[in-house]
Length: 127
Image (cartoon, rainbow, N blue to C red; front, side, top):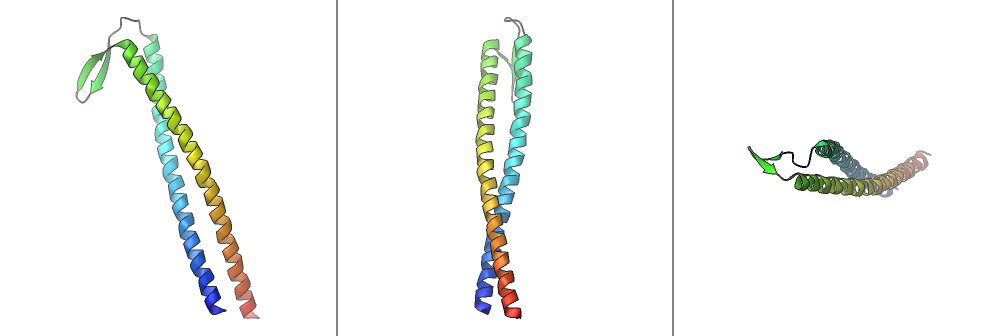
């Protein structure tokens, strides 16, 4: 009986460690997602500003410490591509997050079941 209890406790520790890892990964996902959301907002603002410009307006791009003149159409295309990329990354991260949350719930259920088995084993031992 004691060896079965030790085995259950070892299982509990393993599952709890796996649950903690999933929770940390979810936290990292949220952090990266927030960064992408901020970048998306910034790029939307740039896109709106570019739309307000006349076709012959001067547009400059910061490359290192230097401002380089850039074609307006090229600047708009770059911003649109960046927005497409960020949107795709946000969708991908949402899918990953959903999967990780499902894994988290499954691990949480496993931990609870093992805890119940330990309690049942301890209650049976106490009789």
